[in-house]
Image (tube, rainbow, N blue to C red; front, side):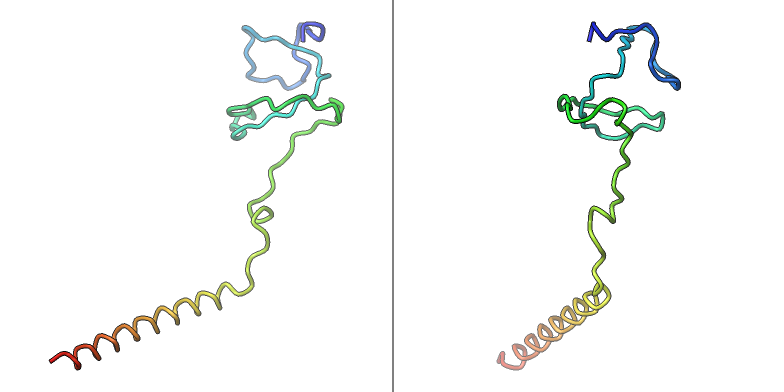
Length: 110
């Protein structure tokens, strides 16, 4: 990175960046990172370097937005209400079977 070093931040909106120990470079190398989340200040929380990307130029890089939970989980089940009724019905029938078995045992016991 020494060959890419510059004196000032290459971004117009370098707000809240530390001035001490900052090492600015020309944005030419593209890397892939993993991270926990974006902070409210637009910074990465717990970033980890995954590797250099040679398939993209620095000009192509944009902040990617995460997929919504609905897109990741897939479409909702159409039978969710029916499934709930089915579960409730089967639970009720199990209770009835249990009650009738208990009453049978009570009648059979001398």
